[in-house]
Image (tube, rainbow, N blue to C red; front, side):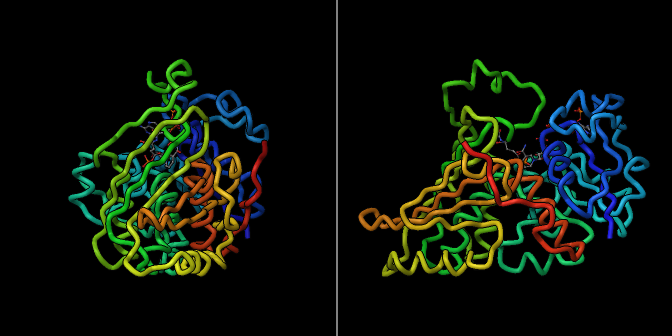
Amino acid sequence: MTVRIAVAGASGYAGGEALRLLLGHPRAQIGALTADSNAGRALGTLQPHLPPLADRILEPTTAQALRGHDVVLLALPHGHSAAVAGQLGPDVLVVDMGADFRLADAADWERFYGSPHAGTWPYGLPELPGARTALQGASRIAVPGCYPTAVSLALFPAYAARAVEPEAVVSAASGTSGAGRAPKAHLLGSEVMGSMSAYGVGGGHRHTPEMVQNLSAVAGRPVTVSFTPTLAPMARGILATCSARATPGVTAAEVRTAYEKAYAQEPFVHLLPPGQWPATAQVHGSNTAQIQVAYDEAAHRVIAVCAIDNLTKGTAGGAIQSMNIALGLPEATGLSTIGVAP
Ligand SMILES: NC(=O)C1=CN([C@@H]2O[C@H](COP(=O)(O)OP(=O)(O)OC[C@H]3O[C@@H](n4cnc5c(N)ncnc54)[C@H](OP(=O)(O)O)[C@@H]3O)[C@@H](O)[C@H]2O)C=CC1
Ligand SMILES: CC(=O)N[C@@H](CCC(=O)OP(=O)(O)O)C(=O)O
């Protein structure tokens, strides 16, 4: 079976990563590539790391250009997916890497994104309880945000095992590609090199309600997340350090067992052996989430650390993993757990 796939937003970072992975996907046939301000240009002038596609000309992002494919991957700024998806029939699998269809609560969407809620699609984090079943045969998929991917994978086993209290604290560092390719002053090399900075502090980051949604569903009760993102001087990667107060009586061995049980069969989550810690360099370009968990008995806190590549498991790799499930292909088709080091 050949799957004909169009990529909207092919000039951006998420679109470029999707194309890098699709070039190694044995079933994918890459169809239309679309963009906005870069429409009309050859892809090779924008994504020179993708030589097999160098001569492809980017088309404007219209339903007409995207029709006639089995799958459409949307890598557009949030707020732009609904209009495009609404013009594509239910026979096309639409996988949205943007935020538009991730949240179930319309009030949360309006508060954090400031626009009308477009709806809710099956959520593309297969490792979460029940998510795989919802993705099988789906015709629409909402790919998680990069921070919520790392944080949900780091904490959900502790909540599923009722090993922690419902107030989580998260500090997560991201590389600059997480902010997209459009030029912004705070992403200049002179601002970022040799410096780390916090932003979105105090509950204002739009990924907070997504983390809350995921962890509350697993915990079966409302969970709060105090989330502080930081910008790190690197192109790719997220390192999320997540903690919550341990449930009274829980032991370090029980916590470890909860994580071992959650991830024993997961192809893309690697629980590191005790004593080894996640690092972004270890997952560069791979679809792996590396996780380690510790129990700080003196502080009564469970601490879980997760490293992902924001563009791979955090976006395009996660999108292709969920696409494979929806299409009935082996989940790992075209995806690698092998990183690039040093
Ligand atoms: N970067 C990351 O780590 C992650 C990104 N995402 C999500 O993926 C999506 C894409 O992000 P990213 O690739 O980083 O962003 P980029 O800024 O790198 O790319 C944006 C893409 O969208 C196109 N575009 C911009 N405006 C419009 C418009 N009005 N209509 C149609 N196309 C438009 C751009 O085209 P042109 O270049 O021609 O202007 C470009 O191809 C976003 O929703 C983002 O939130 C999700 C998780 C992680
Ligand atoms: C470093 C950096 O700026 N990261 C972005 C991550 C957003 C992202 O990519 O996620 P969405 O798909 O939800 O937009 C941010 O914090 O806004």
